[in-house]
Picture 1 (cartoon, rainbow, N blue to C red):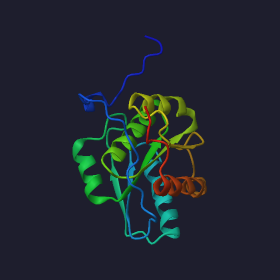
Picture 2: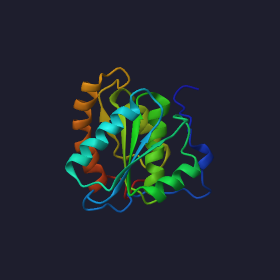
Picture 3: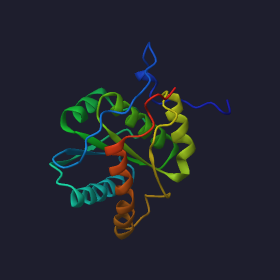
Length: 185
């Protein structure tokens, strides 16, 4: 079936379609608990830690909360969504560097926005089409995820630190100003 996209979040389907909107945005990251949600992909935690460090250099972050989604291509388990809502004020999700994990990361970001937690999702450029397709499936075709060059998995520590500095600017912008979810149809 060419052209068909399988939605890995299908078990979260709701009887009534939800039109996602951005969660309320903070004015600053000062004093906030920043979630770093890795997905077990190689270097995902390393780059998220580097992004967290870059944010902590710019803001007086209360805590960096490191959590892991163990099934990178599956939807966030309800327990993890609840933990993120309870433990984090904002969350950075990544890194989508394959088709299924990119689509899933975007779906997870939208889930967090619906749950009221601002999210910044990081995907690699090679999977922009997959990421956009998932956003469309989740009724948020303009969902503003962040793109970084592909790949992440084979970067050295120095390259990751450099990349994280660039990504951090987009993360700050996304977490503080939101994006194009409101009114998505």
